[in-house]
Length: 600
Image (cartoon, rainbow, N blue to C red; front, side):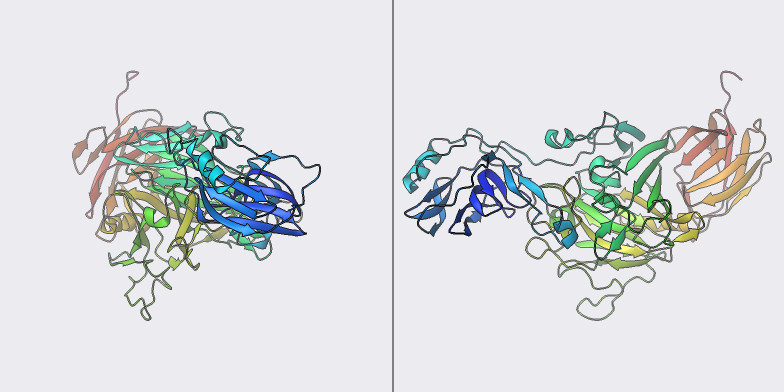
């Protein structure tokens, strides 16, 4: 048995709407049941224990008109219900194996609108030696049947794991590929071999993936396969539920493409519509029918830091939820297997930190100085580190005016200390809220949301964040945050090139070549402890395809892992992109020079 079903999945059944016939199958909680229609009632005989995942289990059900119903697991009687007389058979109804006749919704579905979408429930696993007898089995018959079919391999199945490409570090850059999950899932997708995107790093075993199973939301994957992501731009309705990218089960509205990939950086464009599980928009424009669409641009550098720049084209003035710290569980894992109970560490620009525990459920407030969680929250915290059970841990750096808020949803108390759902990722049924009950399939949970800086303009609204994974403490992220939020000013010394402004949306200084023959750019960065230099990037527009070399404070930096450059061809020309691994809190001088080419 690979996975528990969403509700009741049949091993075999011949029933009509729970009014006629019989059903033998497995419930959403993993219990075996034999159900029959009798005397106008639907009688359920369900096992006390749950079936194990992934392993062969011998199951049997029996109805004797003189004794009643019995269910057996591995040859032993589990439970029985005493009743006598014939059952009410369903006329002109086929016998189905592995699929239920009655359509329903997943158990633990949270919202009425999701419950209105009903589907047949199927058995996801292996079936062998299905037998239907013309007589009722005795206890001895069930024990004998089990003894006769002992499998050579007790566990023929393994958990399916969300795919993230080859293990370990790899050449930096973004590539198109197909990240295969499982044959049963893959065969439904009408895609080719270049439908997903993988970004790898040569200095880190972590990676970033844009995968169909998460509707192309960027996911940050640790060296041991733990996944972190984020919520899309989400809007909500009291009657029809959530409008978000995760409702787009078939990726009808969701895409991702590589805009740039060179030695210095990779840029990925993810686009999606915030739709409901019915594929419709919330409050679409009455004239055009357009609803909420978002473009997310991820500018990713060799140090593993990614800028997430969200641009929303909407007509409700920047409303909705823009960010939610969302984590995934691989099959076979609960949230406690993914993160420590002390799950989140926050820091501010001063370097003050605090770690928050979910031991007693989610914190009420991050800045609550009173009550049962008596602690001092770092004022104006804008950096977070998720305490993954891995060496590499995901982080987010926000703009300074952000407000971080614990997710205000209680835990799945009989399953986890965290609220946990498995209606997404991977799952295909139309559903926007289904609490997990067992770790049979991928699931997700959230720690907090943010109320950040939303910039509004006539074209729409936008926001920006830094993401990545680190094997260092949260203290190491403070200089990164300062360098991005308070970037040191650039002052150009040479002629022929202008600009020098810092673009937070790409974490880069922008220059423009006025004369394409100009081959030298000299400038300084006025760094200080509050505005440090931290692995900066420089984009020189219209530089051409000439190679480049760099000198920092009079020292030449050889081309390699600490100095990388690439070229990006645009409609207006070819730009130079430079990334350098260097850190300083003092004023530093830079010289970028064109290197001679064979043509020269």
